[in-house]
Length: 227
Image 1 (cartoon, rainbow, N blue to C red):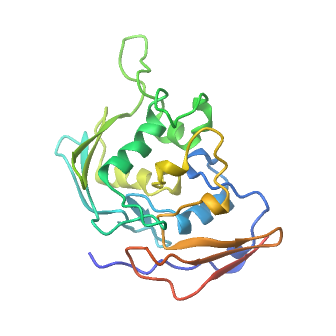
Image 2 (image 1 turned 60 degrees about the vertical axis):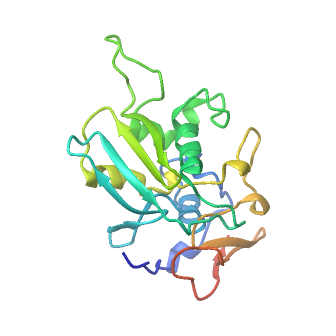
């Protein structure tokens, strides 16, 4: 599919609170300002447009298995972070395992901060109910090759449900090298995967500029937010 032009925010969307957090996996479900900035600075496997349609993101295409338990994502060969780092199957796996696996080096000690993961996937790796069944809807991710990943779930899902969840900015793909204990994702370390980068952030304003490394259609100019 041809790259799409990402609509720029207008009106009230250009007014932000001062509390913007740049690690979308840890955002509250109703943190609209941080999620808006994440939408422009980061990208997931897919993204949802203003009209509700879901379009390719880092994944150029996908296929859901007939049993609804696996979805195969084929990644773009030209997808890179704003610092030039390639976005490979290994990078995508690091992100999903960070969210899913409490034993992962980047997960941290507090499961409760992964609010969107809990909302959509219920629980984490190795958590089971009284009958020994996995509590989590998610069952893991595996790498098929450098640009192909397989996502597995424990209950059948439709393509619409699968993609609807993954289109949330909460599930944006971040550079694992910029994550870790104590990371605050300040502007100078916010390496993006989306169409914009943060070029300036003061007490009164936040400016997004086109990400010259973005695989898709290049934005024409800056977006200026008032805080």
